[in-house]
Image 1 (spheres, helix red, strand yellow):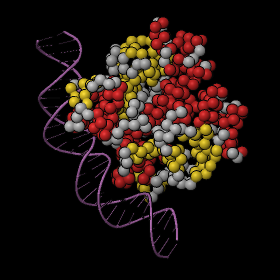
Image 2 (cartoon, rainbow over the protein chains, first blue to last red; image 1 turned 90 degrees about the horizontal axis):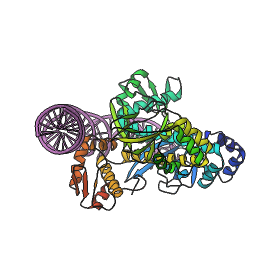
Image 3 (cartoon, chains in turn green, red, cyan, brown; image 1 turned 135 degrees about the horizontal axis):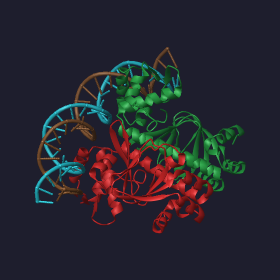
Image 4 (cartoon, each protein chain N blue to C red; image 1 turned 135 degrees about the vertical axis):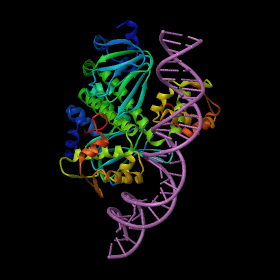
Length: 231
Length: 231
DNA sequence: TTCAGTTTTTGACTTGGATCAAGAAAAACT
DNA sequence: AGTTTTTCTTGATCCAAGTCAAAAACTGAA
């Protein structure tokens, strides 16, 4: 692996505090590769061989059942995914595919478990990461079960606006098709929900979104740290 | 805390492998109390002060938003809940209330984090528990997003039958009202879904359920380890 | 018991969101 | 540029599931 790549991974909260030697051991068996868009990295049901880390691009985490498919999360740089399956040495519960051309580091699960036993700081970081992942899925489940699709969309838009900073407009971070799946609705319904929000002062042009009056959208989404990552 | 209680908690996967001394330290600051039914143990949004362990009874984990409420899980003996919030020292994302009269052990979150740093075996157990919790919420989210309510009900019944063993009938483990909320539907709709399953050979008498032909229900639920805890 | 308060069921009705089908608009190729 | 493919939108229709209302069946206390 290239030195610059190592630096980047080293900077992740997950690896930041671990000792030099364990980190070097861990990375010895790791790969770092480029993938084109739409490549399946992980298939649900398979044994969890590698911890994956997106260092560039974007990865969709999704699940399939009986001819249906749903997006459960989108991993963007720099973050890890499917840590839980690796730790438990259990089959993946989600599939993963690249959304754009992406750069992915892969750390063998066995090495991960070994490093975890040797390095206390790493163990602590893993627990923190895992707890964070857990809380994020709980939020997703609450979102789906408690809000209507219009409310979910409003909450998502508020969150993106928040992330984008104080600029008056922002871009949707991925295709509407995937956003719909993530929000638990059909693309058709997303399109209509977007039109409904137009009446509430949301201007949409392609992937560009602008709020006429943020507070009106807030009133629909009623975002809060108990359901939304950002408030 | 009574010695018998300590034994019981000690036997949990979470505490089984930790050293004598750290376990004793951890339990020194812990409480073990009886609560009547319908007592709110935890309110979402509050800072996570204690790890809770149900040693007897049953606890509903639920969330509220804008006048709506949903059950996210039911904790039964002997298991822990809201570990993630304690570990991350973050606000609870779920509320908890006793469903029946219950016995709950409470371990201060600060002690938990300290023990975690001192005892490697405990750290490992926490990671395993946390990964298990994570996977269980992912399953819940998949269940809600991918299956229809009739399918969710069928899957739930198959799971319960599995747990109950080879007897020809089993009991619903809690009120239908709560089951409906857990499965993400209204009580009225659960009632109707149950009636639909009657046509598929599910006999329901109060809380007692009996399958005429399990395979017919399996064909609806299509259970699998990627979405259901038991197959 | 009886009575009050639940929970569960049922019926009638409404609605949010899915489905189907067909254009329009972008992207992604030659 | 033009052509193909995919994504996005729109309209029409349908259905699963929610809502409202009121019985029926439990539960638990006096």
